[in-house]
Image (tube, rainbow over all chains, first blue to last red):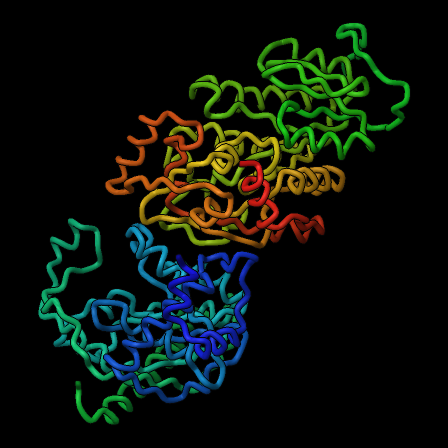
Length: 270
Length: 326
């Protein structure tokens, strides 16, 4: 069945492009986090349609992503659903300079959802656990992290493009594994599902991070992804948390500039 | 030191064996232990025991049916001067209730450790399982040996497996002269293996949870036997995961093994457990339902690097055995 779907949706050009990725998998096409080369190709082929025709994504700076070795793709988070991660993933994998297998860190409740949990793992996503991130960097993967977490994705439309607090975890890992940070400013995803409120009691009851009050529709906002220059941070376990926070602020500031660049470039929302 | 009396057990020993070291292997009736015996009998004088039956292993290898908790077990230590013990025997979940398993697997192992101390045994290898980590939705991949053992929190049926590990660790640190090595292998499969996953892959129909196909690791029984042999010979005391650097989703493994999938409703979580209870099949036990839902992927790199070991058999070879045996 999988082979049949693949033959129907994945073109030869797309397959040969994705095969250029420096991605090691086991004898049956899986890696340790559930990435599967065939399902990944199917997923990219399907999402590429949305990427090209629905969100009409424009990118800049893709050449800043290293062609191999560990790196952290750090972006602002928005839009209630993880569309930003999906679009960054498609951009990375379709990167004409050097395609990379995107490893997006996702919320911990996804594995509990039938089909979706396995599918997300198969296309490259993994639960946002520091051990996962560390081991992936150790194995030379390109990891997408949204340091705002649900604070960013679940924020209301009134707070659009206002960066929320960044966690420091990614910086510790960047220093430990000597992984360059590629900052990304995402513009457009804030407008895909504008939320006016969050039903916190219901979210608590359902044990999900948030339940937004929004139209049950994903708007076709035009999306801009601006990838910044790699930033290298040196440090070790002796680096103070204050110093780490200051470095995180540096990344946050760079992302803010990239967002402003995207907003300035944007001619219209849709 | 206790005087050893060979008369007590009327041991048959072959004069052709001239190896210097004597070892005890528990669980001798299992396919894994027999592969280990085949590998080690060239270098060691082996005594084999099993709690289920007396296993016929030829004239060169004395073999006994013993209950670790019975006094007669000590007679074996009185009779032979063991240099090492490979503790591979375990009472399975399908074999007894929780209390009996605890008595055999935990208290029996404690008895074994105490006898090892009393009779000056200097090396013990304990076979554990990756199940001790517990199948949880929040598990990261590539769990290393320091990851908490959460199985007993998730199911009461695995308390004995976790307690056996805890006990082994306590003895390891309290009695460093015992040189205890604990191995936590991934799913051991292959000819003759009669554990849950092997039984399941042997069937024509295999239950799968609707919407879930956790990643799994498999090791061929002969590769595992080789891993145990190498670990015992080289004796680098420690705790090690044993797994190849290769993975496959459970439903793919089922298909590769030539099984037809039977989807079982996965939500709410009580449903698959109820189905397991109703089916009463050994290959889909209630305590392993979560292992058919969430992955437990272990990092076997420490073992591979410490012992310079790697498995010889691929996943394809493993699954082709099940496919062809149907």
